[in-house]
Length: 287
Image (cartoon, rainbow, N blue to C red; front, side, top):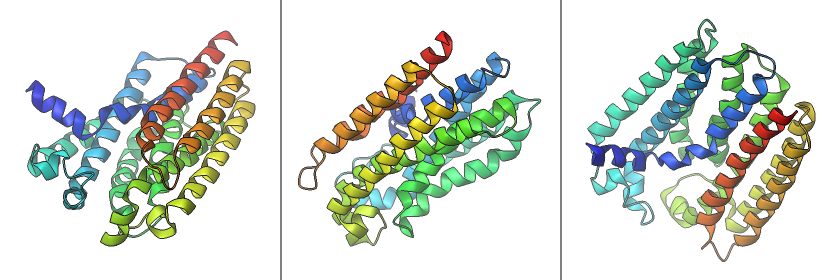
């Protein structure tokens, strides 16, 4: 049983939850400056994030299993390799989708999370088909992740404000940029298979330029968030640090050398997401 559970954790790359969860928690920390804290709300955020991401990731693996089987880089994944069956993954998607919807009940008497749960879930699952018809599929993924701070804010306050919108914009440009970098590894494969991506359409060199511009916009939105949310010098230091890390990310990935894409994709971006949450929390606590 534990082996099967670990296989599902590996299937959905559970460690990659660090890309979105810290931003949902940061939005919650900022919202709790004006609304009462409830433990059930914190639990609701954690469960909704884990269930929603798990459903979306497993569904992506399900939809892409034949494509993954033809790609040397992904042929060893669970479904192409036969480690997990299509039936098992389908049941997992159903279970986690239901878990996401049920978890929104923790936010009652605020009913907005429940009302929006199905449309949000459909949007998250829809990403899996994006690379079949648009080169901007990277930004569909980014839009899916950027919903996390907005959803957390609505769940806690029942309304939308500029603070979560700017935080969502940070995620949109940040995730879109690093997903383009990651997709550069499959430029030739995507083009040969007729799949859409920025690298397949524009080439790796131009794709990295698009990613760079996207990350410049990330930095601009971060400074905007710092200003609008009235955060202090601790978060400002974090914004400066993120700017340096993004510059480093682009310095180590070159069109003729993608050997450090893994470092740029996971380690650096994990530091960015967790670091911003920790510094934002500290900033709020000492204010």
